[in-house]
Length: 125
Image: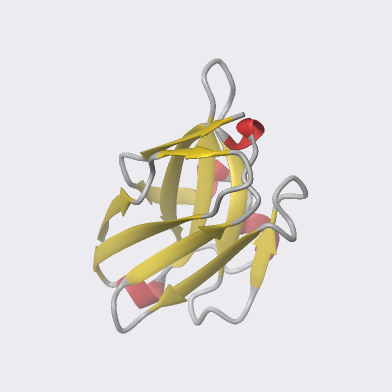
């Protein structure tokens, strides 16, 4: 099992950068991790995923080139560095843990067995 707590969300201006953190307890290195987001009235969508060792990463097209996911297994933490933020990035951001080992599996929310409670990111224009 693993418990997840996100942090780092806040109100920022368009063009700003922000780094989200997701601290985990439990067997963190046994899980691939993902960041998802959910805007009001919309479904939860995949943002970025990373393999157990941090070697394999994948991103949604909407954030490719702007966001970077990375993890520190010694600190049981996964991060999401977000650059060039725009108002369309406004959402609650969730981290999740999955036993799925493929990049495709990491994009599918139903593959995740554990979720944090989310952190709000608001980007003003």
